[in-house]
Amino acid sequence: MMRTNTLGKKIIAAITIALFPHFECGAEIYQWTDDSGATHFSEKKPENIIAEEISEALKDKINIIEADKKLNIESYKVPGRKKIEKVIVKIELVDYQLSTELRKIIRSKVKLIYRAYVQWFGWDRKPSRPIKIKIFGRYADFETYQQGQRGGHVTNRSHYSPARNEVVMLGTEFSDTTLKVLFHECSHAIFHMQVTSGAKWVNEGLAEVFESVKPNGKGVKALFDKAWTEIIKHQLREGSLRTFREYYEYTKQ
Image (cartoon, rainbow, N blue to C red; front, side, top):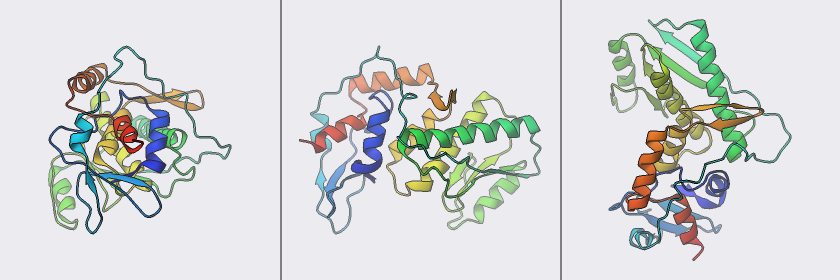
């Protein structure tokens, strides 16, 4: 679920329509307004609340993507002069070795991602907690650790655990590709600091973007995977995906 008058408007101000895949045909989307006047969307029908099912109405809207328009989001920054405090990145290794150089790369990039959340979306300038990363060298330990969580669900993939507020990884030889996986999960950790029940498509869309970012002066610049971007553009053109802008425009009608 997501409130459009807070995080949603900031996302719209910062990111053009080519960024997020938000709606898959066939899914039910519910819209409702709370007592404060805030509009909400959810893939699940809320209990004890009158909500409108709007997926058909969204299908009727025009779905256009400007394929040649360049995306420029590094120029947007939330106003304010207060210093952005660097997020603390805690790396715990379990039977795994990580070079000093890689530690520096990981810490530097995660701090950069947090800075982007502050500058683009108005996240708190003072992080509410550290970003914890736990890397296991042996699969057996990786599996046992997950079984200790409530529910005991086990996956063989690296992931962010909301229950523990930490990124859990199976040790690997870090390359550009595997580092992107780590930064993807760290984005989820940062997102969860302030949005505990955000829409999955926003959370995942942001994590995709933050797999590849670099410093740009005092700001942050996003680097996009061209192949991924072209797939998204194609899906938007054919109507199998919807943009956040369409949700936002629908609420103004």
